[in-house]
Image (tube, rainbow, N blue to C red; front, side):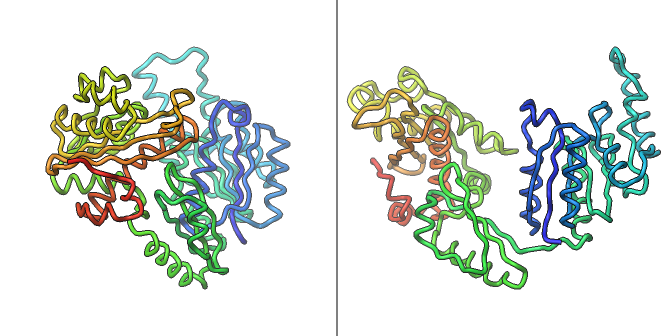
Amino acid sequence: MKGVRLLIVGSEVTNGFTIDKNTNFFARELYKNGFTVLESRILRDDKTSILKALSDYSKSGDFIIMSGGLGPTDDDLAVDVMAEFTGSRAIMHEPSEQRVREFFAKRASHTRTAAGFSLERALRQARIVEGCEVLHNPAGLAPAMFFPSIPLVSLPGFPREIEGIWPQVLKAIEQSGTEKTETTEISLWAISESGLSASIQVPGELEFGVHALPFGTRLFLRASIKDKSVLHSFSQSILDRFPGHTAENPLLEFIETLKQSGRTMTTAESCTGGLGAKLITDIPGVSAVYPGSIVSYANSIKENLLGVSADTLDTFGAVSHQTAMEMAKGALSATGADISISITGIAGPDGGTPEKPVGSVYIGIADSREEHTLAGKFFFPFGRDIFRNASIYTAFLALYQKYVYYNGNLESWLQSDFGKNFTFQE
């Protein structure tokens, strides 16, 4: 048994009403645990199509994961399809039936029952196929089903419910004898795919792939169990080759360093429109080190809230080293934070000039303990969305390298490949 095949069922997906998040979850989790996804199909709620896919998949002998179709409506076909496919019948799972009854009884005691509600229909999601192994669903009402002889697991379609059942699924895959491999992935911030390819030679024993980061490349590596020493050795060589570029999450490591030191940070954004603040405040507990931010899209806000001088804006423009530096210094004064990052650039599609084309961005860094303010120039002419993401993650990498990897050793950082992009002003 070489790998896993995915079957995502739901007309809401094939019609474009719902984004398929399940394939991504399955693939990421399986890769992380050393299993290989060999194929994935998305099917509408159609009995004939599902039965054909099951027939195709089962001939391979690979492990099958099917999601969707375990709900209470007539187009939830998983139980009936699996009953027909296995030559069995649909029966009521008594513990699940009790959960459904208790859930709707409790709900009815707190809120008016919706018009057209049918307990009989709701109980459809308590059905299973006779002879299957039941997998408990801690986040929903419909139980999952495992058929060891195929082997196949049938899961609900809701991602939250799948995540709750997932440890049981992994156990089933491992017990089925599915081939396992050794895997790793390495994030390489500020390293392009072409730059990476020119710098490394992947051993023939390894399977590899790359994926673009907002500002850099992620390298995926896989090896057979017998070749795991080759994988580990090569992975270490990558970490040694690109010092300061391989943090899994540069922002998170910087935030943890702030917490340990008792210092705070703030952001002053123009062209990124608050994206940096959003990503920072996605981190639980970050309020301890992040008092707030200023989005200074207009020059008037740069002047009035950040203290950027009118002379600087008139002489050098809003998109310049000088403005980025003054924005960073002004953010410290406005928020009382210890460290600030500023971003000002031209996202496009308009606004560029021959001297400052669309895609130009300046990133400033100020520190209340330092006399100098830094600013670096970068160029991301790839459209507004990629431009904004690349600009933000460039700023995060700068903070990580300066304060975490180089531990405040400014001279060493400014001599590094990435740090050379920054200059300072007393």
